[in-house]
Image (cartoon, rainbow, N blue to C red; front, side):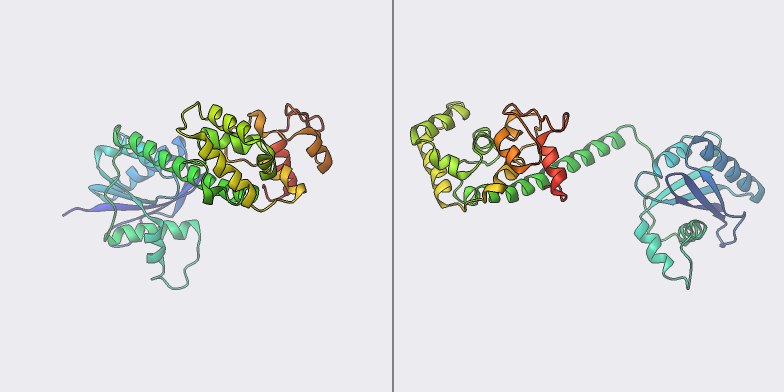
Length: 305
């Protein structure tokens, strides 16, 4: 019959707090902490090996809450440690929710690092609903990181697009309803939003010039650019008018992220009127050198646009 030693680890950025017990729940040593780095992990290996040898145990079960990635290097190092792996080693990255729910079974237990390490060790001793033991794989783990990073990027992109849509409503309230272009974030649509400060500017341009502008920005790929221009004029005529002081600010937050584009810079006369900063037509901010006007307007708004 297996006789494992059980170690519960409360992981943190700087330290790992350890509680070691046997399968009967008797603690074998005083609870201790080691640094969450290679020297600290080496110290843990020595103390764990000493406890295994002294108690005649045949395997080592180690559990830690999977808090961020603070557990990862610790587990990888343990899984590859030749000295520790002369015994059977099982590593369990436990969902914090599992230990938090288990902790509720105790009465009046304080929330401290040493107490949390005990709870993790005792939850490991219970043995039910534990995750699959950790194993590092050179193929799976890099792929996992890439997939999760892609999800992170897609999620952020969707969030930024949703924010841009809310700002776009201020600039041209009918734009997303009339849909002058098949996609708001296409090249021609972005050119329109960055070129014209307000819907009044769109309404003021002659129809033929607007058709030519759209056709050139769409690289002559529109089947009928006059239809797009007509819808764009419909947007201009039916949208709410933005108050004059807000035109400059809203133009500084277009639906794009290329902050170095000249179309992002606020024109000199308008920015001088606001009193925030003085920018030339080519986007040079003389009042605050080195600050992009878009960034400066966000800082002044206090709620970051």
